[in-house]
Image (cartoon, rainbow, N blue to C red):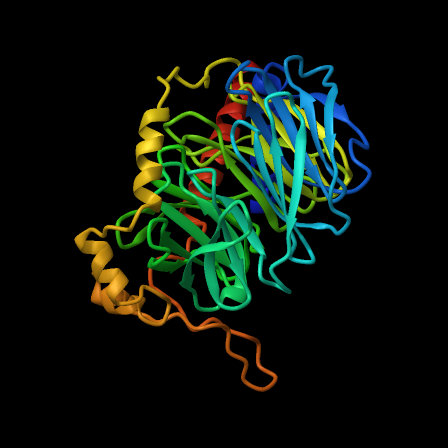
Amino acid sequence: MHRPGMNASRSELSWWLVSSSMTVLGEAEGDRVFLLVNKIPKAHDRAIVAVEYIRDPFTQEVSLLTCAHDSIKIWSADDVTSMRKHQEIKGWRCGVQAFDVSSDGRMAAVVGVDSTLHQVLIADDKTATVQSFNNGCMQIWQISIAPDRTHYLTANFSGALTLLDMNGQITKSGSFNAVKQISAVVYSPDGKSIAVANNEGVVTIVSAATLASRFFFEAHAVKVRAVCFSPDSSTLLTGSDDRTVKLHQINALKSQLVKSFCGHRSSVTSVQFDHCIDGLRFASSSNDAVIIVWDVSSGCQLHTFTDSHDGAVNGLAFSLDNQYLASVGDDRSICVHRVDNSERRPNDREDDSSTQDQHIHHEYAIPTYSAEESFVHDAHGYYSSSAHYRPDAADRSEYLPMQFDGDAEPLSRYHPAGLRGRVEDEEEDELLARARRDLEAVASEDAYGQ
């Protein structure tokens, strides 16, 4: 690699520093750990929107499930270099708007662009049953399978978050302002919270027991396309059209920005933690076919895959042992990447089915509220009233949908302080200074050798 001279400009030093780091990564880790090990082109007839590893609770067999605009397919995952299609499930003609699947793969939910919910149930003998529910135009938009696996959380354009049972009937509903702006919903792993993101960059944390909003915060200035809780439910990743990923600490009544991750050059389409409880590694993807594996502690990119897909990457999934990362996209391909050398294998945990059953019973029995939740519930807990119970008076702001004033650009009216992350010039200057010192040392050694 060409080394810049002692009088190199700032831009030349920046390029040399980044290029040197990428070369070291490729030699030290890229060839040894990070590698595209399998690619299945044209795995579906239409674009693939989601991917997930699933484990059969009885046979312990691990499979890879993909959902596309035309069908769901289940693939063998015991040998990542030669995956075989086991099963294909069809039952919808319109494209897919939203999708979710249980960890055992026995239950999946597909929402078409016509707002029809297609419930997929897979029996012990692998027989799949598809049942469709159409509650009306725009009445089912987003979807997330509830922790009890007998309900679906949805958003509808009537202005509410709703729980549907397995017959498509509403069992619980909570009013939600600006519901038409919702872009993503996800349950926390502990089943206690729901993160609801929208097109304006705002994320609302909702009580799973009551469907009442606890608090909201402006995660980004533009649309949030992807959200993911850490395995211990303490932090939340958000990916946005601003091309950044942000990590937020989720507390009882407020959030705190932990770190911003800058590396994508297009809209972030997916974010996914691996399965280790420490939440120290995640992956993100973007519209320009880039996949980045990140280290949370340092904020650094462990590796960047740029040639796996041709087009937008729509979904990511870590294998259950954290050794591989599967990705799917608009090019209809499935790609499997090696991303670990057995250092990030999750710890073996005892079966927590009894704990889960106890939690589920509490979630969907007649709700009982803690002092905090009762106060929130009494205040209705929605955007218009959430400011009244925020603990910090300095943060009391009311969120309203985007306002348009003539020909002016639309602006969000919610601007809390301290939530916007930026790259500090001092950090960049320190890196450049370090690069210059390294060059000086090399030049001195060369001169001494002569």
